[in-house]
Image (tube, rainbow, N blue to C red):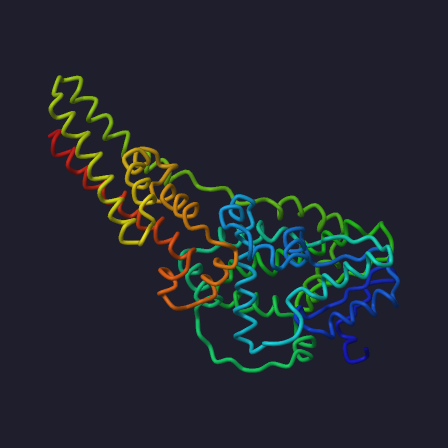
Length: 388
């Protein structure tokens, strides 16, 4: 155990931090040994309920219907698992434990000997949403390119060196920090603070063994030096999900209001021929161009019909989109699974949009929305021409 002593840190007599590598067999064994030797009253692990569920049933998301995954709020898990898988491949790690195996081992061993377990990480969905909100458009593109599609030369890496130098997830996040500092702050600094706050919250429950990624050790130690009230008090703020801006919604709402006002003025003036011409142009162009967009995307025939019928009405409501209705129909007619989603995210060949079920759904949504938007703009211009 001596060669890994730098990953075993005693804060005081009642708190020990154990830094691990998320793909190392040695980490799994080290966790089991530390629980047996340290004999903690509480085992705290760097997990949230979402990640724990994924570790316990790794095949679960693969076999679940994509619509159910989205409805259950698990789509972030697909992104996380796929990003870890890609980063593991880039680092040349093609063997060893699955990411998070040592965290699951900590829970299993604790359960076997009757030691209570505390999950101390922030919900991964909240973390990803906060990170996404913090980033600008350029940062988002750089992150997606770096994690999912950028091809790099693969060099084999020694798993034991990985344990000494830091865990896989933290290594991935360090790369994110270089590419997108705003995301890095949420993914690294905020989580260090959150983990520390959660540890402080349970200090009165007895002797604690906190099992965390080795990359978090330094940040947690720094935060534990602060007054416990300070770190605990910030937890509610770190758990907040970002609010959506309504500016775009209001701008989009103004367009149909103006068009409806114009048509209403025509009716008020008794120009019913112009009213009928305006309504006809709106219905035909919206339906036609939305349908063409979905057809080009290779959507199911029923998706084309649904998107075309929905477009004239969704174009009047900024909170709805024809592509969503078409995409929903596509999912119901050709149901993708979580495995399809992971394959779509991890592959870099652009043909995946047509070959993969998830890629096809995305194309249908995009094609339907672009077609509907084009139809609205052209029809709007025509209505202005009719009015004036």
